[in-house]
Length: 90
Image 1 (cartoon, one colour):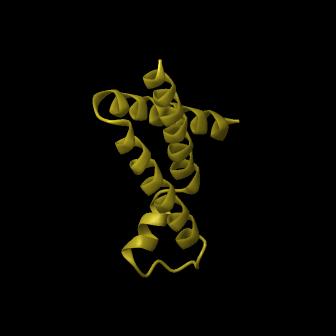
Image 2: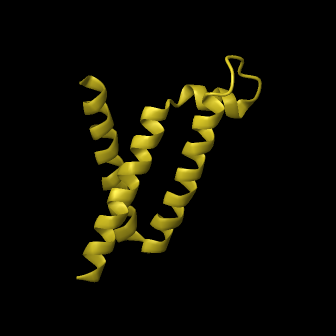
Image 3: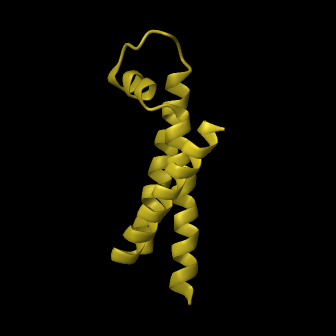
């Protein structure tokens, strides 16, 4: 249950950051940062599952940032993007 709370808290912080960035700048910046973070989270997940030896810096970084944190940031970011799009249409 503690991991669910951790996931929700990180996703909430990421959504608030996306909304704040969308209000301060343009919505397309939030969209492209979301695309970039999604790609990086997927690459980090693949590198984290490759083997037990961390040879490169990318593999060490993927081990340092677990998939729970990276994917909760990505999901929260996309929720924030949807909210800021909804706010900007009104």
